[in-house]
Length: 388
Figure (cartoon, rainbow, N blue to C red):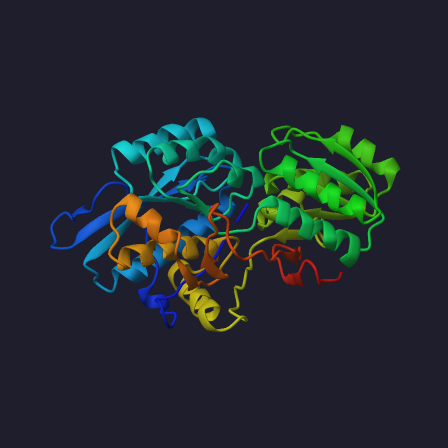
């Protein structure tokens, strides 16, 4: 699923950085002298996987509020579009964003499936997008000129997690489970490819994430007695799968990708069933601001505004907004000028350097792993270096 950082050409000034833009031209705000542009934010804000979309939305809002507080000539309005992660809802929302709300940019869509359907609409409308969490590798292969993401794709994520399974966890037998989604299926495939090349014996299965009973899969896993189980999918289904695995007597190490990096995983698994599970993500979560500098400032500002620590993709949402803010600060207020600016941006962010390749992919490629401990997710380290 997704992230990046902020800076004002020189030193990072969190209180004066980040924002979002809109399609078309700037307009007079309703009662003041300042012009304003509208940037959209699209994702699952009320559905079962909202826990991994609300933090980046809040991060983006924090960035834009900080920018607007400097009383700039052109202010930014962030408008949310709740797709619930469903393409059939996301597409009409995108059309409304273009034709009615006249956005000049979009943060999101958040998930890979909805992105595959919405991004062609934004491309046709010539409106730039920056996803903070859609990681499907195929999204970067369409030649889109207005599409960007701020996190490494699933090929990078899958290889990183697979490397950890083989080296950090030293697993020789691995069972791969996928939810068969645009996100989970290719991620699982890359993990399988990586551990297989490392010499592991692999078996696999597919589940329906909307289902409630995964006994058929549990019954396949149990006799195989794997050292590790990897699930490609989101935390709502992952939690149910863990619960049924533990109830079925399967104690193997459970791993998943960024779609499961949420406290909801432990809650769905019931009690302490998820404890010890390892979750990978091409994102760096630093609620204590231990990274110092911009990360520490961001963590403090986020905690003060939302009364909660930073979470998955909150920094990425902030960084995506920062990219749009920097574009507007540079005098770009139309979608096409903002898009042109994004092809040149190269500034430090909270999570990593904000810089895009010609294909819209981020320059930074790090993958991190986290260990589930109750409802907390302490960082183990970079996937290539971490050990259990």
